[in-house]
Length: 351
Image (cartoon, rainbow, N blue to C red; front, side, top):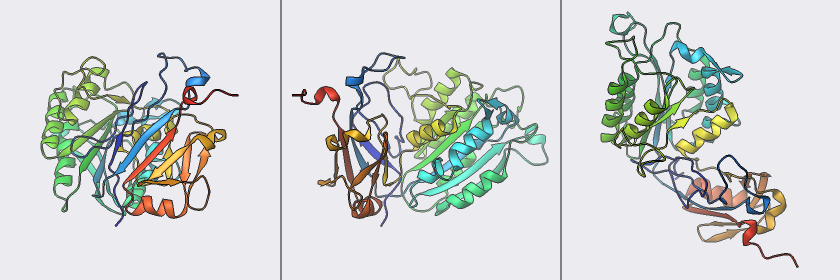
């Protein structure tokens, strides 16, 4: 039986972290990297340190992408629009989030907006829903590609989180369940679509989802949401007090603002959701293929050789590829993959 998207990865960033799914079903990818001053690159002799363990959960999760479809998603963001940058980061067939998700997971999509609240003949919230199912990536990609921001669209985030949670709760079977909320502006409500005053309802909906065992991860697309609102939503989605502040309170959830570069944003999204059972391994730092002899990969206690038959090779200076029987093991019932490249300061001095 193929395993799941959800991962538990141990170790720690020495200079920051990528949040993974936790709460209902932890998934955290964290790598030990040599420390460096904020805003500065570490000296060359301190770079390229990698030391992490990837543990695979055998229970397939269910993931629902909850995407803001309001008019403001059509606004400029980097070289494109908020909608296009986010969509490219998700649907790109090679680099996008969907391409990295585990085929054994249930994946779904819910686009949300409103137009005039409950006074709209379309109802509120206005939803485009692709139910989370196994093998559902093509349907999710197709529905997303056919959609766009709604002219005059509002942002009823609380009601939409509640609908997404209900859809996930209605699914049969076991396994962790997650909502990935991507939004660009302040929440409003179906009762009061404008002015925006829906943060309390959105926070309560995230708390209610968490109480049902559904973890809500939040991505702010642009700064329209505001840092403190994003912080509060991130906390609520993790079942934590809204007033906690990341970097000040130890238990605060890290708020995540989207990169305007689709490829970087795709990496951020993989960091939130966690990698699939994949034969591609992101190292999270530049190591360099010239250091292949220093690398040590161990799968369920068996060390993997550096070869293209049943071992591993570099795909680029930051990415490894697992091959052959080792890849089959990862995609089937592998449990633990350990990856280590020592810091250059760990190496013996040249003779």
